[in-house]
Image 1: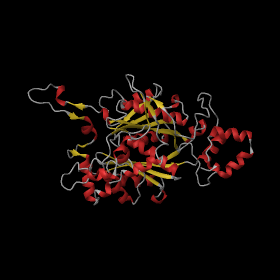
Image 2: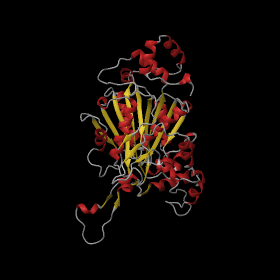
Image 3: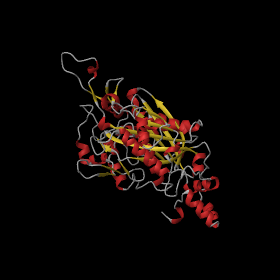
Amino acid sequence: MTKSSRHLGPLKLRVLVERYPIFLIKYVFMVSVDDASIMPQDVCIVGVARTPIGGFLGSLSSLPATKLGSIAIACALKRAGVDPSLVQEVFFGNVLSANLGQAPARQAALGAGIPNSVVCTTVNKVCASGVKATMLAAQTIKLGENDVVIADGMESMSNAPKYIPTERIGSRLGHDTIVDGMLKDGLWDVYNDFGMGVCAELCADQHNITREQQVIGLRGLAAESGGAFSWEMVPFEISGGRGKPSTIINKDEGLKKFGASRLRKLRASFKKDGGSVTAGNASSISDGAAALVLVTGAMAAKLGLDVIARIRGYADAAQAPELFTTAPAIAIPRAISKSGLKASDIDFYEVNEAFSVVTLSNQRLLNIDPGNGGGVSLGHPIGCSGARILVTLLGVLRQHKGKFGVAGICNGGGGASAVVLELINKRWHALCCYINYKLPAAAKITSADVSPSLGGMSSTS
């Protein structure tokens, strides 16, 4: 990074301009002229964070989804420089809510220090829950109902309970059946009574996708080794208990399972004869949470917040339940159109990998290229992934100097959701903040709180 391209937050910019007026003139000439100004009612993203993604019964399995959600919210607010008392509403994606207790979204919000007066809503749109939560949060801002909203997704698939359905009325003679709540409520096509992997096999057949083409997990390893995910991730400490040392969790566990030779030897999981979907090219059962802090453009300017991006548009789509794998190819163009953009304007796409065939089929239908790897590579905590792909997309846009990006995700039942993001030029936004900015005493925001860097933040469980 060159000196001329370094970002200065609004508070630092204000100090420099007041002390050295000539700096304002130089700064104006550094501003990119193709960045549109932020309007008062724009939906702005000012803080994001996600936990590392833990493997099934892995490093995060000791924490319920609500605790993971609290960690993500607290870090996103800290990175944004927004006091929890300013939050007006919370939308939380979560699929496997059984045994979490009442109102999981509210538990996560209060655990992050958000006041009791804040309304919290749990959203279940299966894998698209986190994206849908973000869309609902954005809508309240566009409608003028809120100025500061949290959107989040959380899941602990490791802690999903098993059910004995007959116990409520009492079991009589014979064996009782135990139902896996994770399969029943998250990974099973109830309309056709088969696993979601069968839908993936159907997709592979329809789009002539071979098993060899589905070996895409190594992209995630390459991306991680290059530091692609460090910007978005919040490392945190988990107590070892009973005198054992604490553990710092700072990497996605799902990446450990990959090796080209091993991937090619795995047996098909959902189709005995000629099947191509395996444990290696299906997303990993995982735990994790991700959060975004959304504010109006007016509130961002008032508080002097560093805007990362704005939400340009969003859309849902649906088709036959067994065809859920290709529903993003409907939702994504719809979202782009609603944003007033064309496909040629989009720099990067983030399509969640429920299975490798999901990404491969949508790449073909939309004529797009793959990126860093997603659910197959990193893991797919189903209620979290929608929010996670939005956070990851922002990181990709930053790293590769993109402007527009689209995140799309399919969901069980035949649906999909997509959101279009526009990365904001930091110098332009900082200048706008200086011109309009008045620091409210109640917010007590310091230059340390409004930080341009999202890396290295730590939380304790």
